[in-house]
Image 1 (spheres, helix red, strand yellow):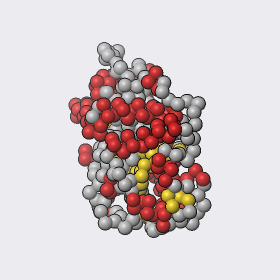
Image 2 (cartoon, rainbow, N blue to C red; image 1 turned 90 degrees about the horizontal axis):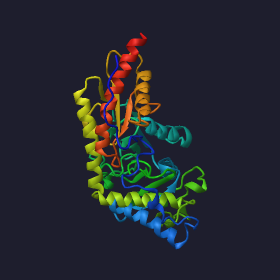
Image 3 (cartoon, rainbow, N blue to C red; image 1 turned 45 degrees about the vertical axis):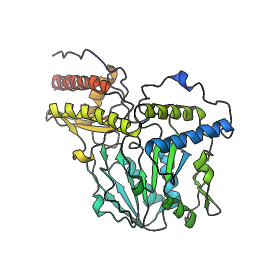
Image 4 (cartoon, rainbow, N blue to C red; image 1 turned 60 degrees about the vertical axis):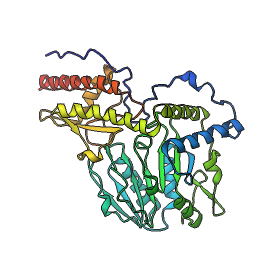
Length: 384
């Protein structure tokens, strides 16, 4: 049976969870002022890098005594840098409820080989933070990019903790209200919520983290690209725009453009509101259809950026194959690009609802999701 296709498509069908959609204001010609062919150590380069740091501080509300650095290798590089420099002074607790958090567990347990207790939750669930010992160093993701599960708030983190909190916030920063007084290390990358270009990471350190850096020397050697101290003192230049390795000034210009757009839409509050509106549109769709549901089981911990969905219809014979076929149908129709679930996650879809996505595009995409589901059900029946 032929199934009618929706009449309209999203103006921008890009719903990838990384790299994510560019801001609606993006245009290549707006990058014309990038100082290409110039040293990043020249005054113009330093000024742009400092502007990226300080505008990030302003929009996110990062306290004045926290250091913000631009580091290589995206969020991964930033979080690895933090772990290799800071961990080992005391036991650690590693929390994981999705694939990237599980990756940090592997690095600590198998590579650094420090004393660590590992607490995990299945996809769609989250670790009970009330049972975490914050007198240890605690590593966790704020938002599970591959599971669609996020920390609801920082209430479980005590102000008088003895350990450090290391938070991978790569798909949370600029879309969620992060409690800076509860976070000692925060990392993210440009290519998530603000739709920037890849390869650059942000490393934010609290005064407590700086104190640890200057008072503790890890037992293992640190490669040059990871070093944050010299002679027992913080390398302040890293946090003033003097990057460890050469940054792309074109990517920096793109990030500055995204930050300007973020300010224009109301700063952090405006960015959060945009992501919340996108997720609400998906939530309304899920509530109206009994064959699909959120992977995250608790509404309080559902992500408003990487929204993960699962098919629940009993007629589906092979969940993984069905989900891939639905995503492929939507891609072929240019209705939704890159919405398949992450390879390590349960079968389903992952729709980026971050701030750079327009709610009108989410609303235009969802009828295509219904069309693709029904078309694949009919194809499955015909093949039986």
